[in-house]
Image (cartoon, rainbow, N blue to C red; front, side, top):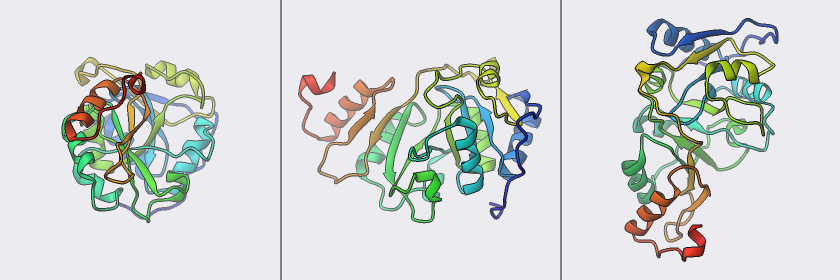
Length: 238
């Protein structure tokens, strides 16, 4: 991974390219921009996301600016495969995390895990944890095998509805980004709502908390029952 350096200043009047993520040349362009510490947008298996290097404080700062995201809200990280977890997560990986990863990754599950201490404080909002997800989008994961993990958050202004197309991303972001990768039928993507978030960073004896319901909360609760945690009361599942 290249050493960190200051990104080029992004011009609010820049021309934004929209290129198909199925095009290898477009993914190469995205790779180059990401390595240059710039912010791009791309589809995931949930909603479109703003993405940049996870290890560049300057790039992550620009991501906050583009999205108008409050600085106290940490940025999740997307990974291509489980090997990339080692760059982000402090060992040991909790057994329940391995269990949920085997069941739901790649997919709409974000796990809150203990963070490695070298991660930029701006990424984690100064917290000792990091949010990690492996998206079920083959072409995006192919890109991340080149770039490494990507800091990623929904491609919209903070508090506004998520974008579901490249054209919506372009309309929603007034500050401008150099590139939007557009989904195509070749990707096989089936869009869904934002992911379910589960905190597995706590004591091993404590049932992990579901912080955002998302699309698979019921399946997560059944899996946690199967793992051996005491079942929740029915009211707690609603």
